[in-house]
Length: 293
Image (cartoon, rainbow, N blue to C red):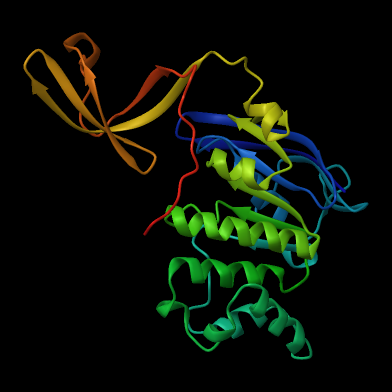
């Protein structure tokens, strides 16, 4: 459905990089672009939307050329059938929820706007302004508005990154449902590996402007052989000395844990830094987590 072959010179914090992406995306798939900040993921989304001009290449969607540098074809953003959800939502502050959703459709499409508000749980909030909405509610408005034009391609630039863990999980479920119900082809930029596993059929890992790995999340992230070890990334919250050892208080995900460390292991570790901890995991205790809040 989508043939992407785009190049652009980028100026990053690490100097100039050449964004060069050549991938194909199937109709109806939810595809994730994964990688560190500055790799070129957001720039690629903006080139697909027509908001940033590529240096060269081509972009063909459903057999229609949206961009071709050799043929000098470049459709405007208004001519491309896309929905775009930005990180900051980009809602109109002076318009109600309903008016934000209905902005891109005609006055004859009242029933479609009603359906979108119902799909995203916004019926009771339709007369409110964005300033009184929570982050999760604003995200729902942005999603509903992006679907209003019934786009062929939905672009999501880390849409859930600013939300807390519980709200992010809830909206991931809703996003998966919306994607399935609408039959959209969706491209999601995400730093959250759990989010990628939950939502994406395919993932493309981008490093310094180049796609280095492609496949299903399982193929891309679980290819390595099991090593019998559990490796975790943690932030150092506190360090205290008790007799001949040190106690490190660490933030692992949303949990605080304490571990014992020697003087050699502590080294020059400082509070606030991120460290990796590794433990043998041949016989871990596994149980389902319940939220009792």
